Image 1 (cartoon, rainbow, N blue to C red):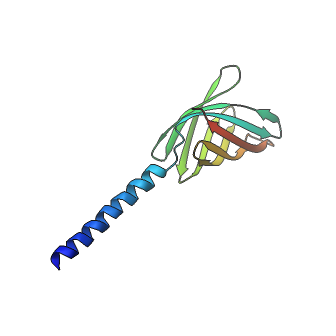
Image 2 (spheres, rainbow, N blue to C red):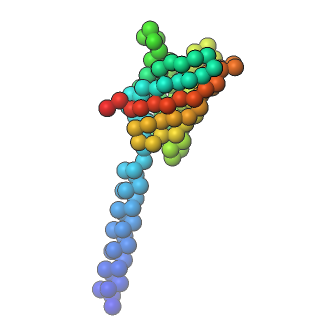
Image 3 (cartoon, rainbow, N blue to C red):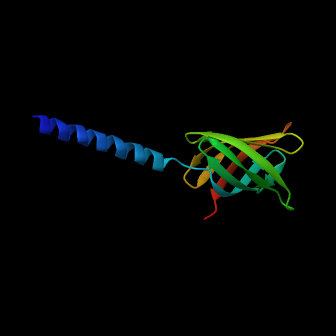
Length: 122
């Protein structure tokens, strides 16, 4: 009887470890280079974000047409994230990640709101 109990206990320990590893590996990460398409009240543009995720913290750069860049800071919780940077005013991206795609809303400053989609470069 002790042997059967030991086998059952080992089975559940192994099953728990496999579940934890699977959940950890399934988490999406924002690390990478992202090509975005932003549509707002001021028009359309296509910035490039280069992001690095360390646990729930995100850092990176937003590269604008013409070569200038802004430092990005952000946080991620599950698949929901928020990114901010300053270009005279604060710009806020709020969205979701699903694999190699992101989408959400953007607040580009006073009276300029919009949406964005993005694809991670391979």
